[in-house]
Length: 333
Ligand code: ADP
Ligand code: MG
Image 1 (cartoon, rainbow, N blue to C red):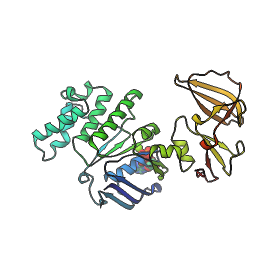
Image 2 (image 1 turned 45 degrees about the vertical axis):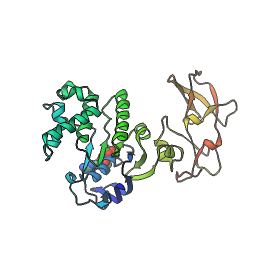
Image 3 (image 1 turned 180 degrees about the vertical axis):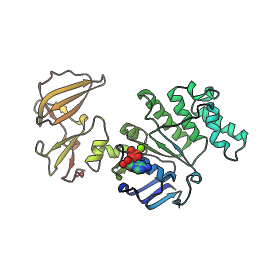
């Protein structure tokens, strides 16, 4: 069953064409991550699905029924935002139960649902506390919990981890992944962070300027990006792009090489000097200047040292190179 179907969606804010002919099907139970740079229309797309924005063109379907005219409250969707506001004077229990108090669900069932969710999110020991007595991560879990207690058919997440520090982001990421495995609910998750997209998604949707550039499994997008934008957006450090003036390979206008696919070689096809290097413990990133301000990043496994400014030659296996034409479209297999 298709949980969310978007057909030819267009959305304008004045002259600003924010969503351009968006077509997307999300299967029931799927975890879809929409990723793209700030301002590309991700939040607007979520708001269209939630019913908080009405598209100018196109059809929104939930479970294969058109919902363009259905109000947000009746769409059975729960949304978690980046800037979650908990009620400061309410306890965790009250924050979690509040949305249910407005329904016809009995007090007893509400308490049951809150306890269930508190257990899933390890908040059972904190139900009597106020938000000010919680850590940032715990507060974020309460915000998640508020969505969970509603037992919605679909979860929408809009950059829910942006306010957390790196360690907490990773923990919460793991928690969200586990939650999805446990509940099996359809999730559409928006982020500008390619790591979150790569680690969480069944399916990634890459957006740029209101357009969907590519839809696919994380490794499919990493290994076979359709164009320069997707190639450059996914992967950290980012893919190197080398023009045919420096490196001709078949009929490619641009050759894309991932940092991990470059190696130091005595006689390499690419020659430059070491501008800088970063040792991360597990890996060393070497920034190589090919001249004319063209920089490459090489990722070497392990700990290495270099003399700054020294000559260095690089090479790669041809089958690792990703070739792009003059329109920026991938032409290699
Ligand atoms: P993202 O979530 O990818 O950062 P948004 O969907 O928030 O992007 O915004 C997409 C574009 O729409 C941006 O140019 C933004 O300025 C514009 N925009 C978003 N919301 C509104 C609004 N309520 N009124 C006018 N313009 C808006
Ligand atoms: Mg946004």
